[in-house]
Amino acid sequence: MLKHMAWLHKVYRGRSIMSDRKNMKLFALNSNQEIAQKISNAVGIPLGKLSSRQFSDGEIQVNIEESVRGYDVYIIQSTSFPVNNHLMELLIMVDACVRASAHSINVVLPYFGYARQDRIASSREPLTAKLVANMLVKAGVDRILTLDLHAVQVQGFFDIPVDNLYTVPLFAKHYCDKGLRGSDVVVVSPKNSGVKRARSLAEYLDAPIAIIDYPQDDATRNEGYIIGDVAGKKAILIDDILNTGRTFSEAAKIVEHEGATEIYAVSSHGLFVEGAAELLDNTKIKEILVTDSVATKEKTPKNVCYITASELIGDAIVRIHERKPVSPLFGYNKKK
Image (cartoon, rainbow, N blue to C red; front, side, top):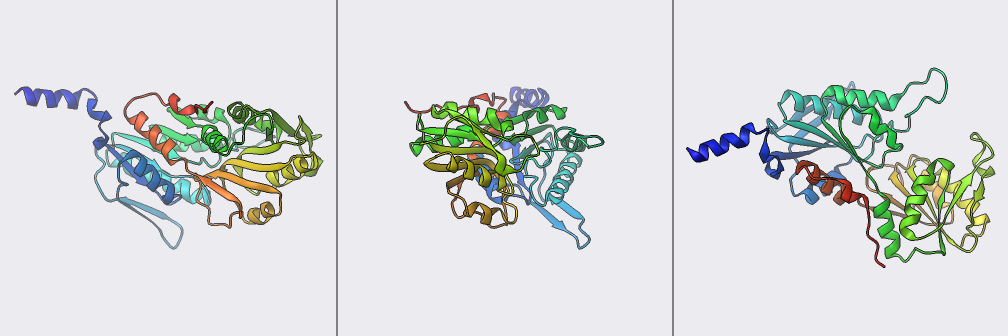
């Protein structure tokens, strides 16, 4: 009788057994299966079984091949190229989980497409990042876990909890391990909007910062000038999204002209659209560091170096599931 009452207590306490990972299920959609498998290994939970296919007319069908009733479901999907296909696949999967009576639906977005459309820059422009946020919430998502949003204020577009993880501690560890720290290193923001990101990395590396600015917002990239000193220093260019490669390509020319001895580049999300690899291969950049948040089918630069964000995301998933704070993951304790 006591055992039966204890069991009832667990059931009706609003699922006090939630901290048990047996009540968690992970699913991977088609955008980035590789990082999903790494996250699964980090969490210690195998990926759930599902099928996702596209009909000849472009329609997507998702079928969950195991029960999710009463489970906390975590869906891993980057909304990268092709953005709309991956977004629609995600929305359909969320709806499937809602209709299958999942206890909670948590979406893991290593890369959140449309995040750059976070403001109305001119008349009659849409606020697409907010629209996508509304779509996810309306579909039935309970929580978002993402990695380095283009703009942190995008978190406010959601009416649900959003945990935005930072990649700078991962990059800081990589560069400290390589001995790239101190006054002979300078962290360069290739545009004035990325100063905060550059300063964050510079603080970890005990290095100064520099900024590449332009006479006006619409100026051609080769008209940029440096605020700060890069002469005789190893320059690390930092940005959040590496798309066409043009920003890094032009920034590399500018810092080289100003006397930088070595040039490195780092970005949270390596999209590498067609032509980016060729452009970056023709620069003096020694290493391009990116996370594995995006699985690109395009050619990548010869000097690209991937660092996985899977353990960071896996740790965050476990902390969320166990009702623990995620903030301890935001830092890196560098060795003295």
